[in-house]
Length: 176
Image (cartoon, rainbow, N blue to C red; front, side, top):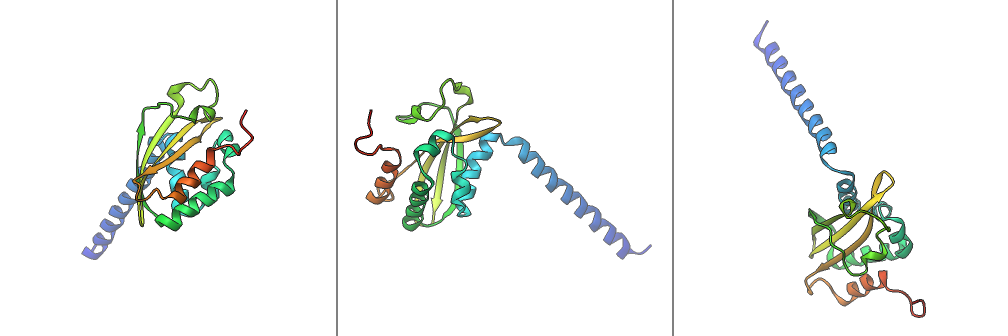
């Protein structure tokens, strides 16, 4: 047999090994990420792909009853208009601690060890902001029950602040 034949066999073996390694990494990555991790990362993946409806569909029942898709769509539209598109994001899972207003969205009797809080550093074309997502189990998956964005006053313009505040404020005359 000639050297060309052995060279082709060697390349085929190497390519097969690389393919197996890559598919193993993809399978391992699926097992490493929890359902909550997948939901949190999916939220920003959907926003990065401009699939606002898919991002909104990750909201839990209480949040989706409070924040309509139209409000969410307008908020993200305002972000994109002022900050540009998402370029990248990094996240960390943080210990859970309740934030003001968040109690209204966490289902009663949810054990604190099941509540996941993710903090994201989001880099956009014209800004860098932070976002946190709070997730709780909903059946056999996790749903987002709270989110907030914050950052430097350079980026948090009055228009953006007004949109964010409008999400969770009750219209006049509806307080109990």
